[in-house]
Amino acid sequence: MIKRVDPKTLTVLVTGATSGFGEAICRRYAAEGARVIATGRRAARLAALKRELGRRCHAVVLDARDRKATQKAFAGLPKDFARVGVVVANAGLALGLEPAHQARLEDWEEMVATNISGLLYTVRAVLPGMVARDEGHVVLIGSVAADYPYPGGNVYGATKAFVKQFALNLRADLLGSNVRVTNIEPGLAETEFSLVRFKGDARKAGLPYKGLSPLTADDVAEAVFWSTLLPRRVNVNRLQLMPVMQAFGPFAFKRAES
Ligand code: NDP
Ligand code: 8X3
Image (cartoon, rainbow, N blue to C red; front, side):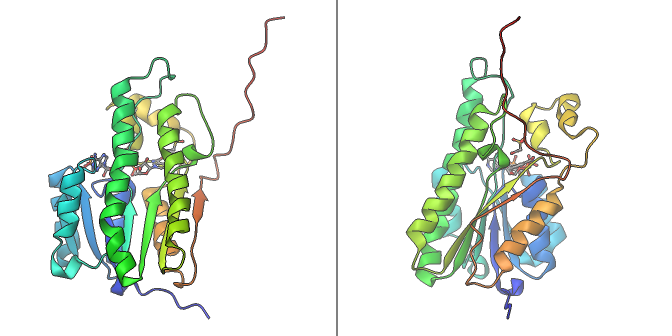
C-alpha cells in the first residue's frame, strides 16, 4: 500500500527561487497546497512570485553565500513557516567554460562559495530542527556534471561532485532518524543557467540547446516533488535525469600525427 506524504502538510524551503528549477519547484508545491519559503537575491522576482502564490508563500531576499544572513533568516521564520519539512538547496551556478589554465579564479571562487558553502549554510540551518522533530527531507540539486567530466566543466563539476558525496555522508549521519536525503542530478535543462554561465551572451547561451529538446524546469520540479512525496519509509538516494536527446561521450584520445 502506497501512502504518500500529503503536500498540504508540508512547508518547503527553496533556495534560488527567482528563476529556473527553484521557481518551478515553488510553483509545483504551492499548486498542491504546500507552504513555500522562496529565497534568492533578486527582490523584484521574489515579490512577483509571492504575488502569484499568495499567502502560502513567504519570500526572503537572501544571498546564499552569506552565512550569517542565512542563519538569521531561517532562525526567524514566521510561525506558520517555521517547521520546514522539505529543504531544496538549489541555488547555484556555473561560470565560464574555459579550460582550467585559462579560467578566472574569481569564477571558481564564486562557484565554490555558492554551490558548496551556500548549500552547506542552508542545510546546516534547517537540519537541527528536522532531527529534533524526527521528520524532514533534504533535497540537494546536484548535476550530471558530478558524474561525467567534460572540457571546461572543471570546478563546476567538482562542486557538484561535492554535493553528491555530501548527500551520501548526510545519509550516513542521519541513519536512525526519519530525515531523508535526496540528490537530484539533472542533465541539460533550459533555464537561465546558460545565460549566467556565459555572462549574458544570449548567442552563446542558446547553443547547448540548439536542435534538441532539453529538460525543462517543470521536469526537474516534478522529480523533486515526486521523490519527497513517496512514503516516508522510502529514501531516494540519488536520481539522475537527462533529456532523451543526451547521452555520454566516449573516452577522448589525443593521437600523435602519423
Ligand atoms: P537559473 O540560473 O535559472 O537559476 C539559478 C538560481 O540560483 C536563481 O534563482 C539564482 O537567484 C540562484 N542563485 C545563484 N546564486 C545565488 C546566490 N549567491 N544566492 C542566492 N541565490 C543564488 O539556473 P537553474 O535553475 O538551471 O539552476 C538551479 C540549480 O540547478 C543550480 O544549482 C545548477 O547548478 C543546477 N543544475 C542546472 C542544470 C541546467 O542544465 N540548467 C543541470 C543540472 C543542475 P538570484 O540570481 O536571484 O540570486
Ligand atoms: C548543468 C548541466 O552539463 O551544463 O549542471 O554541466 S551541464
